[in-house]
Amino acid sequence: MNSVCRGNGRTFVVTSVSSDSHMWNLVFLQLLLEENGGNVINLGACTPDELVMSECLRIRPDALVISTVNGHGHIDGLRLIRKIRGHSVLASMKVVIGGKLGVHGSRQAGSRAELVANGFDAVFEADADLDRFLDCLGLGTPAPQRVAPTEIRST
Image (cartoon, rainbow, N blue to C red):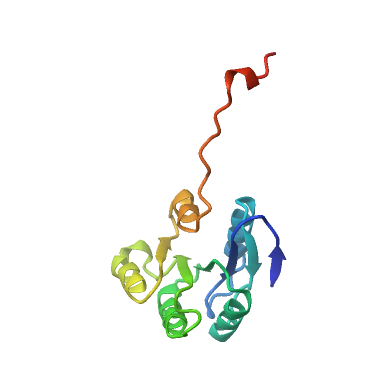
């Protein structure tokens, strides 16, 4: 897909794991991040680990967002995060993963802990709160602005 849309905020690389051919989740995340002011580079589905790493080296995003719905995110995610954390330039990059991380769904609570222990900054299950996800990426909803009484339009 390799789509780029420029916002006014932070830059995100969105991708799936190498074994996941689903695109709808990546398009959803791209639109969500763009609507909240993010610049998004969407690498698409079935992205090889080496391509994810080379694009992150080239772009230097504020965060790498990995989404998966095929149930193999735990396995593929561990392999990828170990490569990222082992790379001298990418080791400090913020990396989050979410979606259907295992074939048994949220019953695999231990897999979340293992993903974090191996270097993910955050792990989001498929039913995660989107506000928490956006807050994690620094795109949380700004506080409502108060309007002085003289600025209120009367009808």
